[in-house]
Image 1 (spheres, helix red, strand yellow):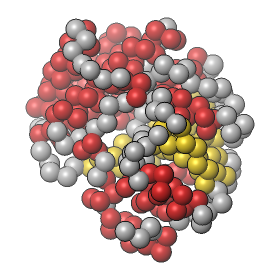
Image 2 (tube, helix red, strand yellow):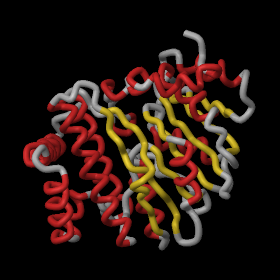
Image 3 (cartoon, one colour):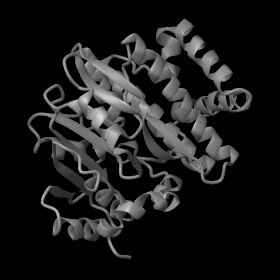
Length: 320
C-alpha cells in the first residue's frame, strides 16, 4: 500500500477546517504520513483552528505564508517537505470517504501517475443557479470517465486528486489551475491519469450566478495560461471540440440523453454561459487577480449542510 501525504491549501477556511481536520483524522487512513496545511495569510480564525489541532496531533504540519501568493505557491511550499510517495491535494471545502481516499492513493502505480475522484455536487436550494453548477460538474465527470476508459485523459480536477511526487517537481508560480497543470506535466512524461467513477467527493454547487461566473472565468483563464506554458490543451470537453470534435460531440450527446429531460435546458445554458465567460476574458471585463483565486462564497457551507455525517466524529470536533 502506498505511503502518502495530504496537502490542504487554505485561505479563510477556518470554519471548514474545524470539521475537515477531525473528519480526515478519524478515517484512520493507513500509510498516511503527514497532513500539510498551508495557510495563505488568512484573516479569519484559520490560524487558531489549526493551532488547536496542532497541540493534539503530531502528524499535522502547519505552514503559514506572510502574504497570499496563490494556490500554486502554497502547494510548492508543502511539496518541498515531501520527497517521495503519493501526494493528495485536498480542498478545504469538500469531503470524501475512507474507501474513496484509499482507492485514490492505491490506484497510482506502474504507468498511472495521477488519479482523481468523481465529483458529487450538493444542492442546497435546487435553484436554476445551483443546477447550472451541478450540470457543469456532471458534464466534466462524463468527459473524464470516457477519456479515462480510453487511456487518453489529460485533465485533473474535482478538488481531491493524487499524484506521484517523483513525477512532479514543482508548479509554475503563475499557474492558476494547479490540477490541470499537474495533469499536463504527468501526461507529457508518458504517465496515465485515472478517473475513479465509483469513488466520490462531495462538493457544494454554487448558489448564485455571480459565484458561478467567477469560477468559470478563473478556470477558463487558467486553462489558457497552462496552454501557453506547456503548449498542450487539457482534455476538458470544451478543449476537446478543438482536439477531437467528433468525440466531443459524442460525449455531449451522451450527456444530453443520460440526464434527459433536464439536460435539454441546462446543458445548452452551460454552453451559453461559457460563451459569456470567453467574451469577458477576451475584453478583459473582470477585476480579479486569478492567481489568488476569487472566492465563490456560496460553496463554503458544505459542512453545515452535512453535519449529520460528523456525529460519529464528535469526540474529535472542536468546541464552538
